Length: 79
Image (tube, one colour):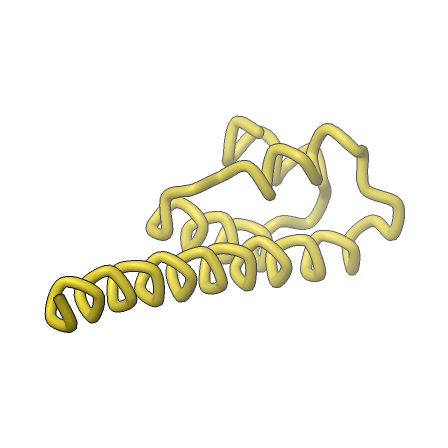
């Protein structure tokens, strides 16, 4: 029983850590974008926060850093 419970706890912990990393990447992306434009469109914020794929979120951070405008960011990401 303890072994089964331990596996469940490990799975919960891993899922929580994944979610925390995803939320952190989304937050970083939005902070970068707010340096370009202080008031971001609500749909863009929701779109960034809705991305689940960690690799896509890493790409979004990179694109945000390289973008000179929100329009440029949207074109590059499709968000």
